[in-house]
Image (cartoon, rainbow, N blue to C red):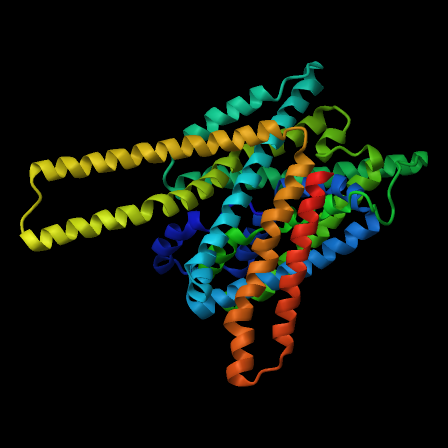
Length: 444
């Protein structure tokens, strides 16, 4: 799961590309790896119960390969049409309407991810409090704290300021993942010695398997950082090989966490695996690592969402005002009068007020969704994965590739029809999967 959107990094990439020699292949590998590591991995053990163990392992491998191919298409198209964002790729190939469709999916994923983060932090905070005091705290209190914290952090207007919290968050989350795997393996060995049966659904769960699909796709979504990381590489031609290695690594990590966690706790597994662990100092350390890590990641997630919406709502208006001011100066060939300066100052003040209101509405909406769905985190993640992530990762890339490469190749260059058929197959599969899994995730 990606915890960021490419739009928030666009200016940073454009300003720094000329000054940098580029990131090395190993650094690119770890940057991509960290972009996929998040809350989704901790939801996989319970998702394995929804899908069944063997079915879930097979689907993780398939989604890993499927995701790799679609991400590879995005980078190939980005290079071909000379675009800097996913929206620009859509705009350059199919027109402005496609950029709006991609923007809508990006906004939905960011809202869904941010709401899941809010729930995750609230639930884990309450878990630590309960482990230490046996007091059950209402989740509204940690959510209200996050409302104030994230609204205050939303005033940060430069991505660079969030770099240090993001690095700390990544270190804590990776440490937490290692601790979770270690604890799950330890618990699995203990129950193996006792020969206890945790009630594992070994093959396939025909009742709730669609919830697994949404959660797994949620975990694999990372399109937001793909293009920015590629832009900053010192050797972009090596990106496909690095991306393949990352997807293989993530598939192994996801299978390891899902299998160990599910085999350890079986049908008693909680939505967040951390809640299944027995209270203790070591468990509290794991939970605190994840809680602080996700808390520090949330402002970056919201920064990306805010950047997307502010760019869509306010950028065109500012450009129009600037063009009009330029025309006035060219016609009169004089500087603006004091009254004109005051009028422009008023416009800037109004724009800042609008942005503050927008940021407050974004943070409030995300926290409200988190509160309403706090006891349905698995359903929220499954719906976001099915409704927003499937089209973003598995439908739009083959659709754009079909129009830009496969179809012109047949018409102009007498290419084989197989690439066209393959793209069409991926599009239809994605559409059918999105509609069915979204419907099932809602009604379950």
